[in-house]
Length: 370
Ligand SMILES: CSC[C@H]1O[C@H](OP(=O)(O)O)[C@H](O)[C@@H]1O
Image (cartoon, rainbow, N blue to C red; front, side):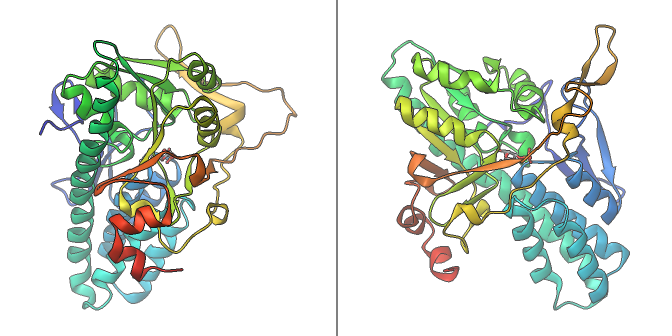
Protein backbone atom coordinates (compact mmCIF):
# COMPACT_ATOMS: atom_id res chain seq x y z
CA UNK A 1 0.00 0.00 0.00
CA UNK A 2 1.39 3.39 -0.95
CA UNK A 3 1.44 5.77 2.01
CA UNK A 4 -0.45 9.00 1.49
CA UNK A 5 1.95 11.26 3.27
CA UNK A 6 4.86 11.97 0.99
CA UNK A 7 6.64 15.29 0.64
CA UNK A 8 8.83 15.50 -2.46
CA UNK A 9 8.83 11.72 -2.67
CA UNK A 10 9.92 11.20 0.94
CA UNK A 11 7.44 9.49 3.32
CA UNK A 12 6.44 11.68 6.29
CA UNK A 13 4.21 11.52 9.32
CA UNK A 14 2.88 14.46 11.29
CA UNK A 15 4.39 13.26 14.60
CA UNK A 16 7.32 10.98 15.47
CA UNK A 17 9.76 10.01 18.24
CA UNK A 18 13.23 11.47 17.70
CA UNK A 19 16.59 10.00 18.75
CA UNK A 20 17.00 12.44 21.65
CA UNK A 21 13.83 11.27 23.39
CA UNK A 22 11.74 14.16 22.17
CA UNK A 23 8.70 14.20 19.90
CA UNK A 24 8.99 15.67 16.42
CA UNK A 25 6.09 17.48 14.72
CA UNK A 26 5.38 19.41 11.57
CA UNK A 27 4.56 22.97 12.67
CA UNK A 28 1.29 23.46 10.78
CA UNK A 29 1.11 27.17 11.61
CA UNK A 30 3.96 27.73 9.11
CA UNK A 31 2.23 26.01 6.16
CA UNK A 32 1.71 26.46 3.25
CA UNK A 33 4.54 28.90 2.65
CA UNK A 34 7.15 27.30 4.88
CA UNK A 35 7.70 23.68 5.93
CA UNK A 36 9.09 23.67 9.48
CA UNK A 37 9.51 20.85 11.97
CA UNK A 38 10.19 21.20 15.67
CA UNK A 39 10.77 19.04 18.72
CA UNK A 40 8.41 18.85 21.67
CA UNK A 41 10.75 18.32 24.63
CA UNK A 42 8.35 18.84 27.52
CA UNK A 43 4.76 18.66 28.69
CA UNK A 44 4.52 22.42 28.25
CA UNK A 45 5.77 22.18 24.64
CA UNK A 46 3.07 19.64 23.88
CA UNK A 47 0.31 21.67 25.52
CA UNK A 48 1.35 24.81 23.63
CA UNK A 49 1.55 22.89 20.33
CA UNK A 50 -2.04 21.68 20.71
CA UNK A 51 -3.47 24.98 21.99
CA UNK A 52 -1.78 27.09 19.26
CA UNK A 53 -2.64 24.52 16.55
CA UNK A 54 0.92 23.74 15.60
CA UNK A 55 -0.64 20.28 15.62
CA UNK A 56 -4.39 20.06 14.99
CA UNK A 57 -7.06 17.70 13.77
CA UNK A 58 -8.83 15.31 16.13
CA UNK A 59 -6.72 12.15 15.65
CA UNK A 60 -3.44 14.09 15.67
CA UNK A 61 -4.50 16.04 18.75
CA UNK A 62 -5.05 12.66 20.44
CA UNK A 63 -1.64 11.34 19.45
CA UNK A 64 0.08 14.59 20.47
CA UNK A 65 -1.68 14.56 23.85
CA UNK A 66 -0.59 10.97 24.43
CA UNK A 67 3.04 11.86 23.73
CA UNK A 68 2.62 15.01 25.84
CA UNK A 69 1.53 12.91 28.81
CA UNK A 70 4.59 10.70 28.33
CA UNK A 71 6.82 13.79 28.29
CA UNK A 72 5.10 14.98 31.46
CA UNK A 73 5.76 11.65 33.18
CA UNK A 74 9.40 11.95 32.16
CA UNK A 75 9.45 15.16 34.20
CA UNK A 76 7.35 13.96 37.14
CA UNK A 77 6.09 10.33 37.26
CA UNK A 78 4.32 10.69 40.60
CA UNK A 79 0.53 10.59 40.94
CA UNK A 80 0.57 14.37 41.34
CA UNK A 81 2.69 14.68 38.20
CA UNK A 82 0.31 12.43 36.29
CA UNK A 83 -2.71 14.44 37.39
CA UNK A 84 -1.00 17.74 36.55
CA UNK A 85 0.01 16.55 33.08
CA UNK A 86 -3.44 15.12 32.40
CA UNK A 87 -5.14 18.37 33.42
CA UNK A 88 -2.73 20.61 31.48
CA UNK A 89 -3.35 18.65 28.26
CA UNK A 90 -7.10 18.14 28.74
CA UNK A 91 -7.51 21.92 29.08
CA UNK A 92 -5.87 22.71 25.71
CA UNK A 93 -8.92 22.27 23.44
CA UNK A 94 -12.47 21.20 24.38
CA UNK A 95 -14.12 19.77 21.28
CA UNK A 96 -12.16 16.89 19.72
CA UNK A 97 -13.02 13.78 21.77
CA UNK A 98 -9.76 12.10 20.67
CA UNK A 99 -7.88 14.29 23.16
CA UNK A 100 -9.75 12.84 26.12
CA UNK A 101 -9.85 9.36 24.67
CA UNK A 102 -6.07 9.26 24.14
CA UNK A 103 -5.30 10.75 27.56
CA UNK A 104 -7.60 8.20 29.16
CA UNK A 105 -5.85 5.34 27.36
CA UNK A 106 -2.42 6.46 28.52
CA UNK A 107 -3.56 7.09 32.11
CA UNK A 108 -5.17 3.64 32.23
CA UNK A 109 -1.94 2.08 30.93
CA UNK A 110 0.30 3.65 33.60
CA UNK A 111 -1.74 4.42 36.73
CA UNK A 112 -1.13 1.04 38.35
CA UNK A 113 2.62 1.07 37.60
CA UNK A 114 5.43 2.19 39.87
CA UNK A 115 6.35 5.80 39.03
CA UNK A 116 9.72 4.83 37.60
CA UNK A 117 8.04 2.59 35.00
CA UNK A 118 5.41 5.07 33.85
CA UNK A 119 7.16 7.25 31.26
CA UNK A 120 8.40 4.33 29.15
CA UNK A 121 4.98 2.70 29.22
CA UNK A 122 3.29 5.97 28.31
CA UNK A 123 5.56 6.44 25.30
CA UNK A 124 4.77 2.87 24.22
CA UNK A 125 1.02 3.58 24.48
CA UNK A 126 1.44 6.80 22.51
CA UNK A 127 3.36 4.88 19.85
CA UNK A 128 0.50 2.35 19.69
CA UNK A 129 -2.09 5.12 19.33
CA UNK A 130 -0.09 6.63 16.46
CA UNK A 131 0.40 3.29 14.67
CA UNK A 132 -3.27 2.39 15.09
CA UNK A 133 -4.28 5.73 13.62
CA UNK A 134 -2.32 4.99 10.45
CA UNK A 135 -3.93 1.56 10.04
CA UNK A 136 -7.42 2.79 10.88
CA UNK A 137 -7.26 5.66 8.38
CA UNK A 138 -5.92 3.35 5.68
CA UNK A 139 -8.86 1.01 6.34
CA UNK A 140 -11.52 3.72 6.24
CA UNK A 141 -9.78 4.97 3.11
CA UNK A 142 -10.39 1.63 1.41
CA UNK A 143 -14.10 1.71 2.25
CA UNK A 144 -14.41 5.32 1.14
CA UNK A 145 -12.49 4.68 -2.09
CA UNK A 146 -15.08 2.05 -3.04
CA UNK A 147 -17.74 4.74 -2.70
CA UNK A 148 -15.83 7.02 -5.08
CA UNK A 149 -15.34 4.13 -7.51
CA UNK A 150 -19.11 3.49 -7.51
CA UNK A 151 -19.76 7.11 -8.40
CA UNK A 152 -17.06 6.98 -11.10
CA UNK A 153 -18.70 3.91 -12.63
CA UNK A 154 -21.83 5.98 -13.23
CA UNK A 155 -19.76 8.71 -14.97
CA UNK A 156 -17.64 6.68 -17.43
CA UNK A 157 -14.63 8.74 -18.55
CA UNK A 158 -15.72 11.77 -16.59
CA UNK A 159 -14.18 13.23 -13.45
CA UNK A 160 -15.65 12.65 -9.99
CA UNK A 161 -15.92 16.00 -8.23
CA UNK A 162 -15.56 15.84 -4.46
CA UNK A 163 -15.99 18.74 -2.05
CA UNK A 164 -14.28 18.79 1.33
CA UNK A 165 -14.32 21.31 4.17
CA UNK A 166 -11.44 22.25 6.45
CA UNK A 167 -8.48 19.87 6.67
CA UNK A 168 -9.30 16.28 7.50
CA UNK A 169 -6.17 15.27 5.64
CA UNK A 170 -3.05 13.48 6.68
CA UNK A 171 -2.04 16.70 8.42
CA UNK A 172 -5.01 16.19 10.77
CA UNK A 173 -3.94 12.63 11.61
CA UNK A 174 -0.72 10.64 11.84
CA UNK A 175 -1.02 9.48 8.23
CA UNK A 176 -3.56 9.18 5.38
CA UNK A 177 -6.15 11.56 6.91
CA UNK A 178 -9.80 10.72 7.31
CA UNK A 179 -11.74 12.60 4.60
CA UNK A 180 -8.68 12.48 2.34
CA UNK A 181 -7.86 8.79 2.81
CA UNK A 182 -10.62 7.70 0.37
CA UNK A 183 -9.50 10.46 -2.03
CA UNK A 184 -5.84 9.40 -1.95
CA UNK A 185 -6.69 5.73 -2.37
CA UNK A 186 -9.15 6.32 -5.22
CA UNK A 187 -6.64 8.64 -6.91
CA UNK A 188 -3.86 6.07 -6.53
CA UNK A 189 -6.24 3.49 -8.05
CA UNK A 190 -6.51 5.70 -11.15
CA UNK A 191 -10.01 7.08 -10.62
CA UNK A 192 -10.30 10.46 -12.39
CA UNK A 193 -11.20 12.84 -9.59
CA UNK A 194 -11.00 16.50 -8.63
CA UNK A 195 -11.41 18.11 -5.22
CA UNK A 196 -13.16 21.36 -4.41
CA UNK A 197 -11.26 22.65 -1.38
CA UNK A 198 -13.24 24.97 0.89
CA UNK A 199 -10.85 27.67 2.10
CA UNK A 200 -12.45 27.26 5.56
CA UNK A 201 -12.43 30.66 7.17
CA UNK A 202 -11.18 31.88 9.56
CA UNK A 203 -8.12 29.62 10.09
CA UNK A 204 -8.16 28.62 6.42
CA UNK A 205 -7.24 24.99 7.01
CA UNK A 206 -8.54 24.18 3.53
CA UNK A 207 -6.68 26.90 1.64
CA UNK A 208 -3.51 26.53 3.70
CA UNK A 209 -3.35 22.83 4.55
CA UNK A 210 -5.60 20.70 2.34
CA UNK A 211 -4.44 22.53 -0.79
CA UNK A 212 -0.81 22.08 0.28
CA UNK A 213 -1.37 18.35 0.88
CA UNK A 214 -3.16 17.76 -2.42
CA UNK A 215 -0.47 19.69 -4.28
CA UNK A 216 2.20 17.36 -2.87
CA UNK A 217 0.07 14.31 -3.66
CA UNK A 218 -0.58 15.49 -7.22
CA UNK A 219 -4.34 15.41 -6.71
CA UNK A 220 -6.23 17.86 -8.97
CA UNK A 221 -8.02 20.43 -6.82
CA UNK A 222 -9.46 23.94 -6.77
CA UNK A 223 -9.58 26.21 -3.73
CA UNK A 224 -12.95 27.94 -3.37
CA UNK A 225 -14.53 30.45 -1.04
CA UNK A 226 -16.58 28.73 1.64
CA UNK A 227 -19.72 30.33 0.24
CA UNK A 228 -19.26 28.85 -3.25
CA UNK A 229 -20.04 25.24 -2.35
CA UNK A 230 -23.81 25.55 -2.47
CA UNK A 231 -23.72 27.17 -5.90
CA UNK A 232 -21.49 24.39 -7.26
CA UNK A 233 -23.87 21.76 -5.87
CA UNK A 234 -26.87 23.51 -7.45
CA UNK A 235 -25.10 23.33 -10.82
CA UNK A 236 -24.25 19.64 -10.65
CA UNK A 237 -20.55 20.22 -10.11
CA UNK A 238 -20.30 18.25 -6.88
CA UNK A 239 -20.79 14.47 -6.92
CA UNK A 240 -19.90 13.84 -3.29
CA UNK A 241 -19.05 15.71 -0.09
CA UNK A 242 -16.61 14.07 2.36
CA UNK A 243 -15.64 15.81 5.60
CA UNK A 244 -13.99 14.84 8.87
CA UNK A 245 -15.25 15.24 12.42
CA UNK A 246 -13.97 16.15 15.86
CA UNK A 247 -16.67 14.38 17.78
CA UNK A 248 -19.60 12.23 16.63
CA UNK A 249 -22.35 11.08 18.97
CA UNK A 250 -23.47 7.44 19.21
CA UNK A 251 -26.56 8.51 17.27
CA UNK A 252 -24.60 9.98 14.35
CA UNK A 253 -24.70 13.74 15.05
CA UNK A 254 -21.42 15.15 13.75
CA UNK A 255 -19.44 18.02 15.24
CA UNK A 256 -16.93 19.42 12.77
CA UNK A 257 -15.30 22.67 11.68
CA UNK A 258 -17.61 25.68 11.54
CA UNK A 259 -19.44 25.78 8.23
CA UNK A 260 -19.87 22.01 7.90
CA UNK A 261 -23.56 22.25 8.82
CA UNK A 262 -24.15 24.78 6.04
CA UNK A 263 -22.51 22.44 3.51
CA UNK A 264 -24.71 19.58 4.72
CA UNK A 265 -27.83 21.71 4.30
CA UNK A 266 -26.85 22.60 0.74
CA UNK A 267 -26.00 18.98 -0.07
CA UNK A 268 -29.32 17.80 1.36
CA UNK A 269 -31.21 20.37 -0.68
CA UNK A 270 -29.32 19.44 -3.86
CA UNK A 271 -29.43 15.66 -3.37
CA UNK A 272 -25.62 15.43 -3.11
CA UNK A 273 -24.34 12.50 -0.97
CA UNK A 274 -22.79 13.86 2.25
CA UNK A 275 -20.37 11.51 4.02
CA UNK A 276 -18.31 11.89 7.17
CA UNK A 277 -15.07 9.94 7.50
CA UNK A 278 -14.09 9.06 11.05
CA UNK A 279 -12.01 6.64 13.10
CA UNK A 280 -14.04 5.12 15.93
CA UNK A 281 -11.86 7.03 18.40
CA UNK A 282 -13.84 10.11 17.36
CA UNK A 283 -17.16 8.64 18.48
CA UNK A 284 -18.39 9.83 21.86
CA UNK A 285 -20.44 6.84 23.02
CA UNK A 286 -21.69 8.74 26.05
CA UNK A 287 -23.61 11.32 23.98
CA UNK A 288 -26.87 10.93 22.06
CA UNK A 289 -27.42 14.62 21.27
CA UNK A 290 -24.87 16.65 19.30
CA UNK A 291 -26.12 19.87 20.88
CA UNK A 292 -24.35 18.80 24.08
CA UNK A 293 -20.89 18.82 22.44
CA UNK A 294 -18.74 21.70 23.79
CA UNK A 295 -17.93 24.15 21.00
CA UNK A 296 -14.55 25.82 21.21
CA UNK A 297 -14.66 29.62 20.99
CA UNK A 298 -11.34 30.73 19.56
CA UNK A 299 -9.70 34.17 19.54
CA UNK A 300 -11.47 36.86 17.53
CA UNK A 301 -8.13 37.82 15.96
CA UNK A 302 -8.47 34.69 13.80
CA UNK A 303 -11.44 36.45 12.15
CA UNK A 304 -10.17 40.04 12.21
CA UNK A 305 -6.67 39.27 10.93
CA UNK A 306 -5.07 37.02 8.31
CA UNK A 307 -1.49 36.17 7.41
CA UNK A 308 0.00 35.53 4.01
CA UNK A 309 3.07 35.90 1.85
CA UNK A 310 4.05 39.18 0.22
CA UNK A 311 5.31 39.38 -3.36
CA UNK A 312 8.87 39.53 -2.02
CA UNK A 313 8.37 36.39 0.10
CA UNK A 314 7.77 37.86 3.56
CA UNK A 315 5.03 36.40 5.79
CA UNK A 316 2.94 39.22 7.20
CA UNK A 317 -0.28 39.53 9.14
CA UNK A 318 -2.84 42.17 8.23
CA UNK A 319 -6.06 43.38 9.83
CA UNK A 320 -9.19 42.78 7.80
CA UNK A 321 -11.93 44.38 9.92
CA UNK A 322 -12.34 47.99 11.06
CA UNK A 323 -10.96 49.03 14.45
CA UNK A 324 -13.73 48.79 17.00
CA UNK A 325 -15.78 46.08 15.27
CA UNK A 326 -16.62 43.12 17.49
CA UNK A 327 -15.86 39.59 16.22
CA UNK A 328 -17.08 36.14 17.23
CA UNK A 329 -15.29 32.90 16.38
CA UNK A 330 -17.07 29.63 17.23
CA UNK A 331 -14.71 26.94 15.95
CA UNK A 332 -17.21 24.14 15.25
CA UNK A 333 -20.84 23.38 14.48
CA UNK A 334 -23.02 20.28 14.69
CA UNK A 335 -24.59 18.57 11.68
CA UNK A 336 -27.61 16.48 12.73
CA UNK A 337 -27.57 12.84 11.64
CA UNK A 338 -30.61 13.38 9.40
CA UNK A 339 -28.44 15.41 6.98
CA UNK A 340 -25.71 12.76 6.74
CA UNK A 341 -25.75 10.05 4.07
CA UNK A 342 -23.25 7.80 5.84
CA UNK A 343 -20.31 7.46 8.21
CA UNK A 344 -17.11 5.99 6.72
CA UNK A 345 -15.31 4.12 9.51
CA UNK A 346 -12.46 1.61 9.72
CA UNK A 347 -15.03 -1.19 9.94
CA UNK A 348 -17.17 -0.09 7.01
CA UNK A 349 -19.77 2.50 6.08
CA UNK A 350 -22.66 2.93 8.51
CA UNK A 351 -25.88 4.90 8.32
CA UNK A 352 -25.66 7.93 10.63
CA UNK A 353 -27.73 6.35 13.38
CA UNK A 354 -27.42 4.56 16.71
CA UNK A 355 -28.31 1.29 14.98
CA UNK A 356 -25.79 1.88 12.22
CA UNK A 357 -22.90 2.53 14.59
CA UNK A 358 -23.92 -0.23 17.01
CA UNK A 359 -23.93 -2.73 14.13
CA UNK A 360 -20.29 -1.90 13.33
CA UNK A 361 -19.13 -1.43 16.94
CA UNK A 362 -21.37 -3.64 19.10
CA UNK A 363 -18.79 -3.95 21.86
CA UNK A 364 -18.53 -0.16 22.18
CA UNK A 365 -22.23 0.55 21.91
CA UNK A 366 -23.02 -1.94 24.66
CA UNK A 367 -20.32 -0.88 27.10
CA UNK A 368 -20.66 2.88 26.68
CA UNK A 369 -24.42 3.37 26.95
CA UNK A 370 -25.10 6.85 28.24
C1 LIG B 1 -9.62 14.36 11.02
S1 LIG B 1 -10.16 15.48 12.18
C2 LIG B 1 -10.09 16.93 11.28
C3 LIG B 1 -10.96 17.99 11.87
O1 LIG B 1 -10.22 18.80 12.79
C4 LIG B 1 -10.29 20.13 12.36
O2 LIG B 1 -10.36 21.02 13.40
P1 LIG B 1 -9.04 21.87 13.81
O3 LIG B 1 -8.29 22.22 12.56
O4 LIG B 1 -9.63 23.08 14.53
O5 LIG B 1 -8.26 20.97 14.74
C5 LIG B 1 -11.55 20.17 11.52
O6 LIG B 1 -12.71 20.23 12.30
C6 LIG B 1 -11.42 18.90 10.78
O7 LIG B 1 -12.55 18.41 10.14
